[in-house]
Figure 1 (tube, rainbow, N blue to C red):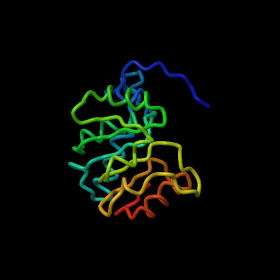
Figure 2 (spheres, rainbow, N blue to C red; figure 1 turned 90 degrees about the horizontal axis):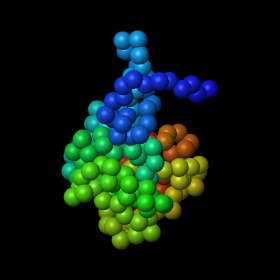
Figure 3 (cartoon, rainbow, N blue to C red; figure 1 turned 135 degrees about the vertical axis):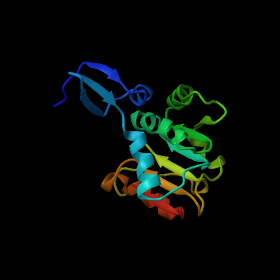
Figure 4 (cartoon, rainbow, N blue to C red; figure 1 turned 180 degrees about the vertical axis):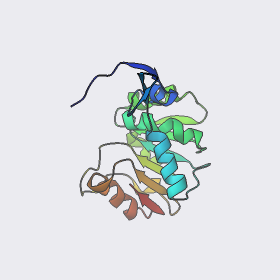
Length: 173
């Protein structure tokens, strides 16, 4: 079950994400943190030895997972970040919250086919769950594209199948 905890302090990462996923006991109180973004960046840069700097990036989704990873991706040095969500107002809100209007852009899901190829595509949606490939235009990927699903295992199969069909350089969950 879920227990409510009175947090005296939360990290800037948790504040930016609007969610806490890690609790630490400090000085008799609770400290809340969000490790989604830093965990993703470390997995990609350290375990997978990838360079994220300067990559033109597409973030699919604008919910809690997207809020958790977007600030860390920007801090890791990605290039422009394009956020697309089925509800465009959520993409707009996340782009505004990130506070980098020259670098972070929201786009309409239906306009994906006109956005060109991205160097890095992150699936932070629940779309594509299961074994059916996601319905995304192949033109957003190129032979150099890194495709990452924030889900893992069976939940990532649909997006990873799309990424392989789109000839992405790498498809990681």
